[in-house]
Image 1: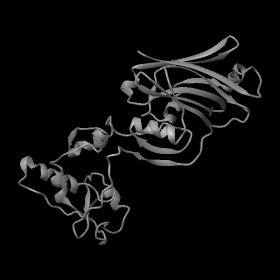
Image 2: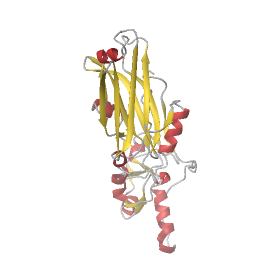
Image 3: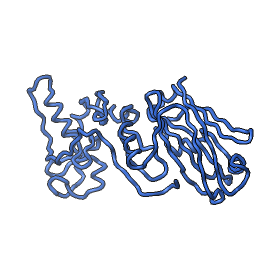
Image 4: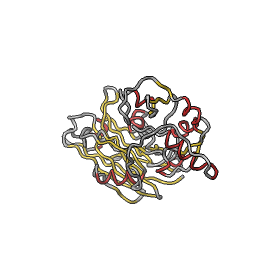
Length: 295
């Protein structure tokens, strides 16, 4: 399975999320409601950029008619997305001051985060929120999909046709008919379901400097603190010889490239791989055995 293929991007969100029409927004605050709930809701809605639908942070801009938008979106448009008036360089200072006194929910609330934060602290939390979407762990194509673990599992099965197996032990054979045609390639991603979690077994070929090598490693579909509860071993060999590796699965928060470049896995030089395949250079046949266990 060589690197390449079509690109695919998007965020897989829960089915309950609906698209919303672009509202007309001017600064106004409801008052007199119990505990100020309606007031907070109104201001929270005002803080949503009508273009990207994300919460706006200073500097907040507005058109001559009072419609607001975030600074990122302002740099991409020349006219107001609501009334089509030409945008100047008007700051909405009143909304910026009101926003500083607010508490707002995490943007990943739709994925399960129920925490509320002071307006200025929200961004810092979101950078490490445990409910933020995960990136697709498939490395064989340029895939930019992100989502929850259950949604990514379905995505891997349906879009990438990745195999999934139950159990904590495995024995896989990797075959290449022309090992001399060596190129950077991601050969396989296999999912394992065990201990109530999912693990990704990667196997690929690439050049380490000028030396062609094969590498196998496991990533954990979840957070790093949960990944540290497990260990795994990989073994490859033949003719009375073997190479073994024992490590801790890396969270898929770490990209495939990050894990590969850190050499955190079983590395087999090409000549050794051919030796394990029977000593000839006509066909590569590697049998990789492994096990995952709780620590």
